[in-house]
Image (cartoon, rainbow, N blue to C red):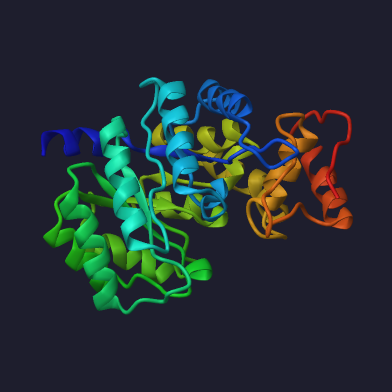
Length: 308
């Protein structure tokens, strides 16, 4: 339990959900992946997550997910907290990957609400409780109803927190701001609440949130981290200015399904080859041009590169 309390103190701020880079033949590009993680840490990101939504986990085999997690773990080497995504549409896979995260020494595991199946609240309780009971590692629930088709309701979350001491927080990719307020009311003010909705990263801090797990951190890690730093230092004006400064970038990075625009942007920055595994693909040419125009406001771009 003392270890869980220690993790709760450390796991705050901008937890960057690093993308999974691929070669042009769609095989894993682990060298580039390590470079991205080092860039994130050097840019000030407070933690690293992988194989969440931005990491295309449903396009990876279980063995590939284990390899990505292990590569990240070794690259981070204890410099910042590590909370990989271990959830799956398949309960046995989620259980297995969460156990793997514990065995490799990850600080926490982020477990998504199973997608496509649309389980009832009773079924969701059993799913998460079984996983939490099987490990000692801290668990972050990941609620993203826009992609899973079902919302993890506050009452269910409250019951899980009461029954599972290692469930310490939630990533809420939920546009219902009333819902996220009630999460803290009913799960406790010390419950770690992370925003997964980019335009709610700053507002969530104001109600007692712990930080964000924002896809935008893949592209502008320093500014996303600075927003949290400013808030922690009581510099509300700087935090609010960064909130509005990042808004055009946040908007354009979600004009296609994440992480397609993010990967296109990183390709334009010369950080990766902009490759997604099918059935995903990079944005169309029109949106790529729009991404490039917005991106110029934030970073110096490499020579234009894009996949079609």
